[in-house]
Length: 403
Image 1 (cartoon, one colour):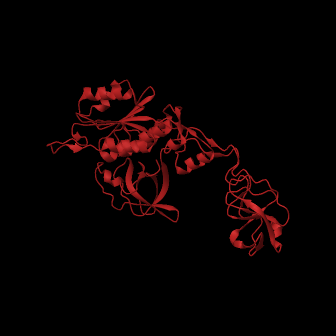
Image 2: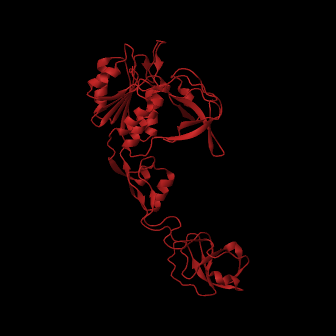
Image 3: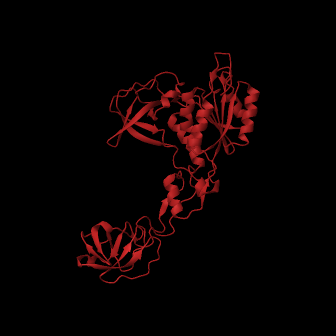
């Protein structure tokens, strides 16, 4: 079996044409976690006028040397202050208030003593103290949030400040997920057959894809029956942008998926990549829809989903990248197990701004050990040409908390 290199498979995946122009408008309050489909541009300065950043007295800085300064009134937040300060005058001004015309400084309350309608300065402040200048936060025309950004609490706060009632977001890609194999049991199903195993792949991948911004169609499990798989796949492709299956892509007698996909009218982009885990992965396309058939082992299906499904979801959402990769230094020696490009579960620690990799608590074994991805794990990448690596060697690592 001829295998594509990992780099070639990623380049081919990147060249696939996807529909990334589908958008919808949602209320700002419902936009958390969605992907922006437009740049958010400031239409005005923030603040639009010099603003007090604390409670105090607005005055002319030159008057701080006076014996006393006359208080001519109050200026609460939200008040449309129109008075113009004269020499020797001040106005009590509160946090967030517009600075009165003629004032260039705000002296905080704790720096003065008040005697009837006058203040005396106990401790001077510099020119412009406690005054937010026009445009301190942003200027009219600034791009504040870029298209493709995942909306979080800060984005919602900024857009609320811009009076964005409705937000244009990318329509969520629909991803259908199914696990194949007569040996697997779905949740809640009981069996007296000890050879059967509990299905986890469809739930793991559904959570992964939802975290990446997709809408998931959960198809559960299906046994090794060629006709049933064919019918289920065909129905899924009528409603899903991406169909992801696990199991049935290897070389066994009951591995039907690899043969069914071409019969669906899908063009196989490639089958077999020189990676560990997941070398039997199959990627196919039917018009604007995609089929990704992944291995059945839990760790394999999860890793290949990260490497091949998440980039397709990101492209459909017009996101720049599906995940973040960083350079890290090995904290211990590493023994490479194959001549393939390997993706090894690891721990990442940040010390003095530098990433370090260790394998504490990570088990070495088959591609079924999903627990290796618990506890804030990452994926270390070692290439086909890499051998055993010594402590201190730099490696590339995919962070798993950035989807």
